[in-house]
Image 1: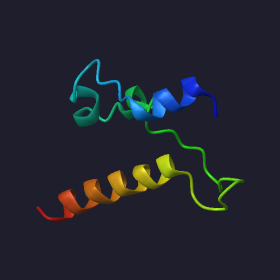
Image 2: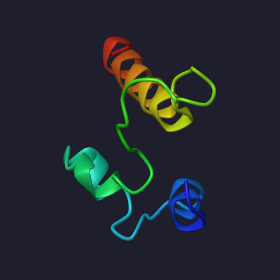
Image 3: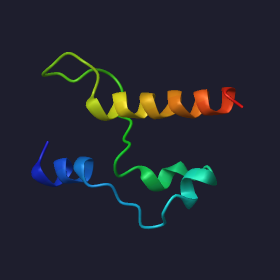
Image 4: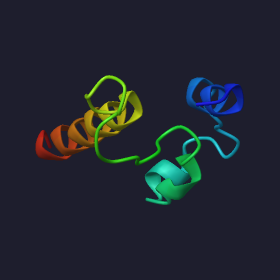
Length: 67
């Protein structure tokens, strides 16, 4: 990954605030939640951003199930 790609992983762009999150327009957050899929060829593990994506999905499911 180049320096520019790392920056996009580290700095989250919330230009529209949390409105896209609550309106289910999650494509606005693609700058920090990418969906590489598969395994990282260097570490043979899941991509860190895919792990973050799965944790976010689990949190949403638990919030819905808790009500």
